[in-house]
Amino acid sequence: MTMLTYTAITSLDGYLEDEDGGFGWAAPDEEVHAFVNDLERPVGTYLCGRRLYEVMVVWERPDDFAGDSAVMRDYAAIWQAADKVVYSRTLERADSARTRIERDFDPDTVRALVERADREVSVGGAELAAVALRAGLVGEVRLFLSPVLVGGGKPALPVGVRAGLELVDEHRFTGGVVFLRYRVT
Picture 1 (cartoon, helix red, strand yellow):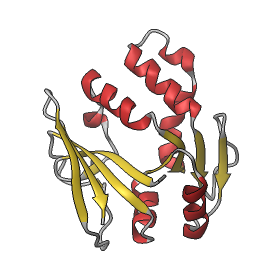
Picture 2 (cartoon, helix red, strand yellow):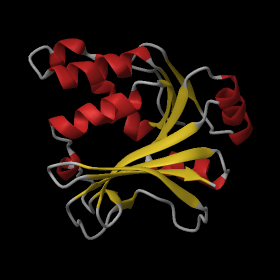
Picture 3 (cartoon, rainbow, N blue to C red):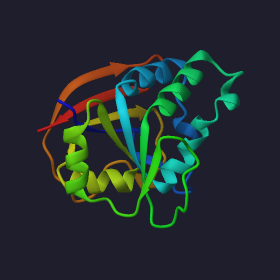
């Protein structure tokens, strides 16, 4: 059965970005990046907000990664092979292939998309993921906890959402990052 997943790299205190909007501390090393690649390989569609899309669209330019590691080139191929739905009221056009822009995130439309999908659907970006979590659409939450405290910023998980979670997988990396995968119950 296909499901909607939410994956995020966070600080140990639960932030995607620090108070200045920075997230350089979250850059995965080769070991973590290879694990992320394997986790993302089944994704057929990415749902993301405009800000996350503007960060991720760099993966659309394979020449930018020609001199980089095989792990980075692999992730670029994974991103390029998937469909992208960008939710934005301001973005005029998409700068990537296989991408469409939607003005509003409609939970019923997303539920139908997930039910029709033959591959995993992933929601990304804290604000969009919050809407999906509030609507009860997310089947799994996958967190990479980075060994850093940033003291504030954009939280990875929404305030005011209550959901039961069952731990179904965990992995510890040599650099101190911990992966936790939860099924939403």
